[in-house]
Each structure stands twice: as structure tokens, then as C-alpha cells.
Length: 108
Image 1 (cartoon, rainbow, N blue to C red):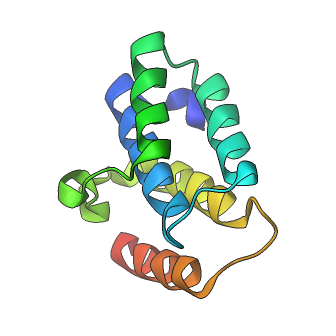
Image 2 (cartoon, rainbow, N blue to C red; image 1 turned 60 degrees about the horizontal axis):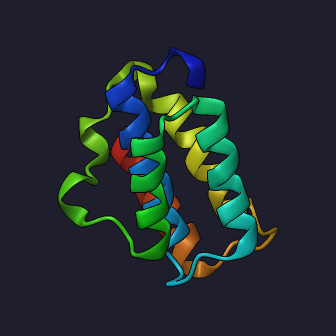
């Protein structure tokens, strides 16, 4: 599923994932590990990896975080990855749960 995403969609996915990692205002070690695993699975290049690392230091801006612009064919992959980062530390904070619920509603 992730392998089927085009290059632009892969970076858009990483932007969403990093945004959700920041939902509780911090990115912990488990979330970082999840993001690094996604980087590997998506086979991102050095430039893309550096951009994602920047999003782990400071959250991506909201201007590109619009779930309604995710193509229908990619929505399941996005939801799976975002749910993965939210659950990465074994604890779902209220902010993360609320953000995930809104995200799901916007995708429907």
C-alpha cells in the first residue's frame, strides 16, 4: 500500500504523520522511531529525509495539512500510517485521539 504512493504523496504522507506526532506538543522516541521506519519503507532520498527530520524538530505548517485533498486511493494508507504514529508509544493522548477522530471524519 505505501509502496504504491507516488513521490509527492509520500512526502505529503510524511508531513501528515509528523503533524500528528506533534498533536500532544512533543515527539517522543517511539514516534521518532516510527517516522524513521516510514522513511526507510518509503525509500525517501536524502533531501526528503532532511525535510522530514526538520518536521520532527518543528511541526509542519498547517497550510498543507488538508485531509480533503488526499486522493481517495491514498486515504487508507494515510490513515494507517497516522494511526501508527499516534499509537507508537502505546499511549493515545486526548489531543491525539481528537485529531485522529477529526481526520477520519474529514476522510469520509
